[in-house]
Image 1 (tube, rainbow, N blue to C red):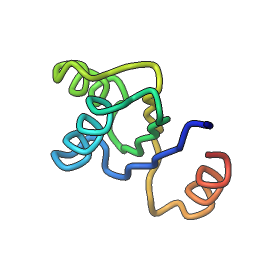
Image 2 (image 1 turned 30 degrees about the horizontal axis):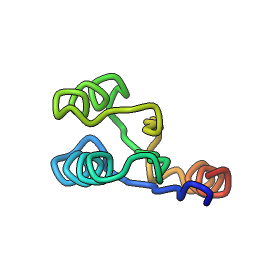
Image 3 (image 1 turned 45 degrees about the vertical axis):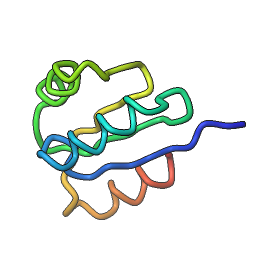
Image 4 (image 1 turned 180 degrees about the vertical axis):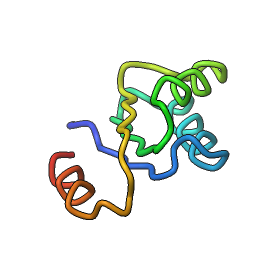
Length: 78
């Protein structure tokens, strides 16, 4: 079975971090998680690592949701 892709907007916020941690702690091998953040990606990765759930299936994308064409391309690529 192919991995499912999950896109989380606002990944660096409280809800985004909680959601990513919940997914990664349950069964991270079934999912590729892509997180959109305006923050520096290393800050978000450090937050996830501090919860003990970070793995290679987790990727941070630094972009602004108001840039519609970039977001549409991102969704298409994922």
